[in-house]
Length: 209
Image (cartoon, rainbow, N blue to C red; front, side):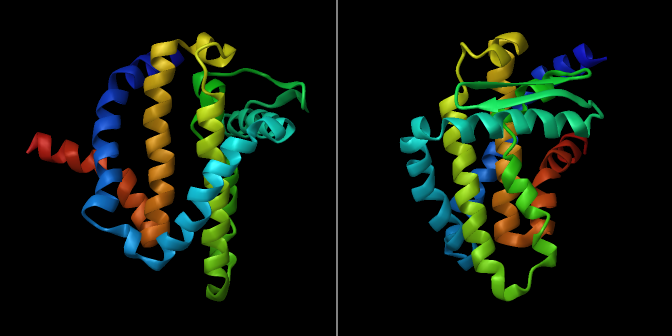
């Protein structure tokens, strides 16, 4: 079954990159989201810290490794794959699960784990804390962007195992999805994030009518 799903993603990913990538760019080029206060606070955290994380990456080895392996584990749990071994140190790490699939394998290269965990507390916040939330979300999301650029390497075992061409297409598509949802959430709330994800449905309806 997973071979079929992987093949479908291989076919869909180029179209997804175009459709969702275009919509992602529209947020800034046509909707001028950068003028929104929420987005400005978010970008204040994201832009400088993306550069800072990238520069300091070599000094944060343990954190990189921990987040990488933690993401494998979290996505594995979503697929009901229990962890058997979890190791993280500045010298390397590993996670062994009872079962797996290509999504679990590639998850650290497209899923901003800590950003989405932070989203869980948003409904509990008093509006007076929203700016602090958006700033924190920007900082953490900046880490994901820089760490993905650092870690995505064609020599990585995860990439080789999943296939270099497939990994490149799939991870690019999924990064646009996961980051696009976050940006639209910051601009327009959860409703905006969901509407972003439904863009494919809109294009499909246009194609069929």
